Length: 143
Image 1: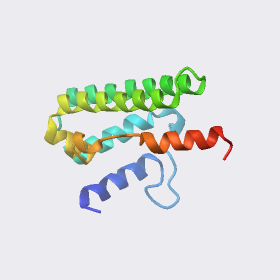
Image 2: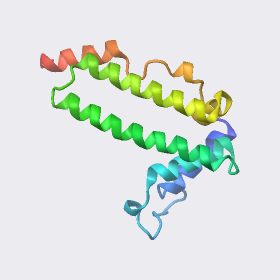
Image 3: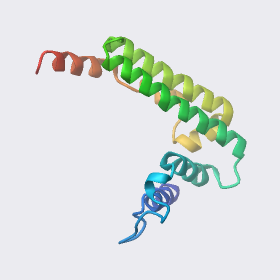
């Protein structure tokens, strides 16, 4: 692991109250903190620098919030049987691809790669459709 990866790991450990033996979450309580926001800030600070354009970071974080909301909607629709497995995978992968495309547009290709650790093109299929559909068929057959 490189130095930035180690620094990020330490930041995440501190956020979750495990930065040192016996460490506990802050006095305000872990439940009152927005852990996703703190994790995103740590990731941005480590991989893009603490002085990186906060307006751009806010836009990317907003996209991530909407992504999580839309993922929950898709999951609920799938669980209620409103989406068949293939439609669910296609919609989920399209949602992620569109979100990452928007993130890359905001950050630029180089900063996108610095933040997410890879190029957008390398992210490819987020849910492997064949594996998901096979698992769904096995679950439906009680295997």
